[in-house]
Structures are given as C-alpha cells and as structure tokens.
Amino acid sequence: MKILFVCSGNSGRSPMAQFIMQKLVADAGLSEKISVDSAASKPTNGEVLHQGIAAKLGMEKIPFTGHIARTITPADYAANDLILCMDAGNVEQVKAIVGGDPDGKISTLLDKDIPWDKKGFATTFDDIMRGCKMLLYKIS
Image (tube, rainbow, N blue to C red; front, side, top):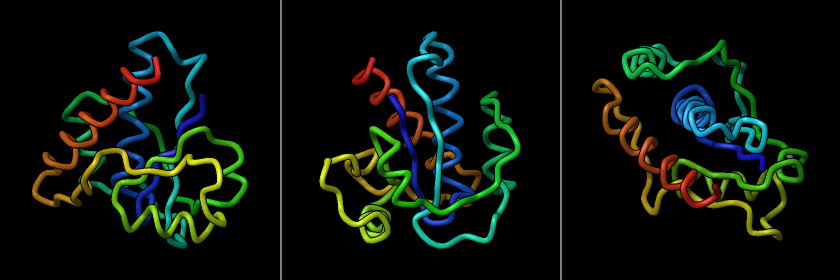
C-alpha cells in the first residue's frame, strides 16, 4: 500500500505525518508492505522541513531525514492508494491538480482540519499521531 500525505506547502504538517507514519509502520513490522511519502497542494519552491516541526519530531523521538518539499502531480494520484490531506482546502486543491478523484483516494486524515499550531506544534503533532494510529489500525 502506498500512502501520500498532503498539506499546503509540504514543509510542516504533511512531512510530520510522513515521518510519524513511517515510524508507526516500522514499529509494526510493515515497512515492506506500506510506503509513505508527502507532497504539497500548492506550488512549492523546494522548502526544507520547518524548524519547529523538526524540533517537535526530535522531542517526540520520531526519526526524520532531510526533506525537500514538492508539489503533488497527476502521476502521484496514479501511484498512490491513499492521498490524505491535512485540511479540506488541501482536498480541493489536490483534486484540481490531479483532475478530480475518480477512484476515491483523496480524503482528510481526520474528520476535521489539522491546525498549524505554531506554539510548539503540540496540537498538530497530537492530531497527526491520532490520525496515523487510526489509519494504521484500519489498514493493517
């Protein structure tokens, strides 16, 4: 199974979800069955991982690697089984970029928008962790 997480710029919420999900998948011994990536729903200039997100991931002992932001493409739609967005606006932006959602792959990670919580990113992290745990339970 291939999962793609999407946020507006691919420097904060979606890479946070990518790295959290990669850890959960690895801890469950499912790395050979589930792959995870992330992308932006708006054109991006190759941004790196936001320093506050990197600090929060480090504090929570979630491994992360160098990250360069990229924008979702129609090829990503074809290549992934699930495209999970951080908010409803991302869903609409992704559908516009990839030409709709004929296969029903695009949705939000949670049934609510995940905030960009600049005060330590605790709410962002907690929401994404909860969503990723629920997702892993559902697909494993």
